[in-house]
Image (cartoon, rainbow, N blue to C red; front, side, top):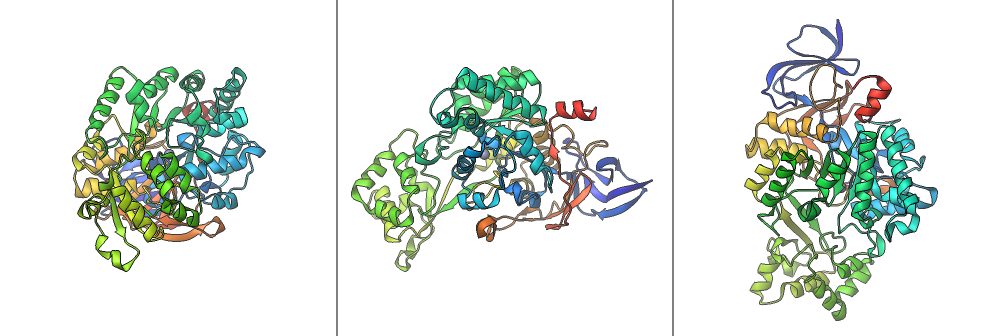
Amino acid sequence: MSYDLLVKNGRIIDGSGMPSFHGDVAVSHGKIAEIGRMNGAAKQVIDAEGMVIAPGFIDNHCHYDAQLTWDPLCTFSCHHGATSVVIGNCSLTLAPAKLEDREKVLGMLSQVEAIPLDILRAGVSWDWETVPEYMEVIGRRLGVNVGMLVGHSPLRLYAMGEASQERAATTDEMETMRRVIREALEAGALGLSVTRNRSHFYVEGKRIPAAVAPEEELIALAGVLGEVGTGAIQSGGGAAFELKNRLMSRLSEASGRSVVYNQIQQSAFAPEKWKEHLTIVQEACEQGVRALPLISPTVVVQHFTMKNCQIFRQMPTWLTLMQLSDQEKLKAYGDPETREKLRADLDLPESGFYKRWDLIIVEEPYLANNRSLKGKHIAEIAKAQDRNPFDFFVELVVQEELNTRFAFGNRNTDRDAVGQLLRSPYTVVGLSDGGAHVQFHSEVGYSTQLLGYWVREQKIMSLEHAVRRLTFDAATAFGIHDRGLLRPGLAADIVVFDPDTVNPGKEEVVHDLPNNGWRLRLLAQGIHYTVVNGEVLMERGQHTGAIPGRILRNARYNALHNGSV
Ligand SMILES: [Zn+2]
């Protein structure tokens, strides 16, 4: 017989975590036909000598909801070996959305995920109102596979209008939300996303609808997944609530479904806290509750100027200033009265910054006579000058007219801690945030970072274990039942990569967004091929022109409509 595709002579890492072996992977009719040494002919042959053949990666935390309407490949996840992405995270989606709510729905995505509003307005063509309609529209043209969660914020706006940012839902409004979730699950959605993130504001300092909802509402909505009997739940900002009152575990218990939440991390603000967090997750698992935090393999450094900065946005005065024009910002930072308000904000218990001036580095001074500050952190410069760090910081910002480039790093900087978290069965590796904060440091290379930095350089785990984290584990956490393994009968989503060179590339600016918008591009090295549903999508970083992606639907949908699980 003749296969459609034969990937030959590679080191097969099947995603199960079992030891690798040398052989071929054959594909027929979009599915994996056979694995091991084979002699059959094939219409297309890929020589994978010296390469790893693995299941395509599942990028489980993305915000491509808008980008998908103009970019069916989901750049740049596709460059890093992703053959499937999960969108609709952190309560944010573009459906359901009534005609009169479209601007607000875009505004929330823009504000929370830092995608400039003019780009969204220019790029998104609204051909839908409901979740099934949205899935139908994007499903017409996909490079990678896309699974969708229903976002609680537009859902709440849909059911409650303006009041969605103000109060609890009435019985009727609850019933509307429950109905929309039910219909979405019946159309194949992968689940529901909520948020508890305290820093997710819409304009004027108002929280987004999902962040306003009381806990009982979340529990009641989670219950719909249990009633229908399918889907997973994702929560933004869940960690603090799991630690406080086990909210994530309770959502899992109320629904009988998996919960994946943001996030466990090693933080310079609380260096030992991750251990306490991991113990709580383990205890819940031992009681039969699956509520797992995401762990990002990316060592996060944010580069910013005070024209455009996210790290101070949990403080109200700082947040207000960020909404101003550059001219107004400069004036405000120079104004003594405003400065005192900014200073007072630093003492707020939920400042999110905790006066860690030792974590902010002057990366690129603007003025020649400030050259000597380059590479130093604010606390050390202020100390040397015998000044208060806040005063020094604001004066530098004003003196350089907002042009100073800073770098801020506070999480996942302790290698031993991050190694333990990445290996732990009680965490889910991911959190690329693909499609989000397009003009800031990107984590879209989390998979190539795991394989290059953590596996090849730091040797924190085997390649087999790492591949399992990026494939089978991610698929399982979100109920993606027919992918994430190289196994005959499953979908032929495959990545061929060079384990000796795989790595994220360097970030660079590209002007390729709607309305001539710009973003940071992060490509990859060492990813040679990705295959989606049996067709080659990417060859050495270039799109082949194929559009083989599909909407990923939950197991219940596929069992009812295709007669198999
Ligand atoms: Zn998110």
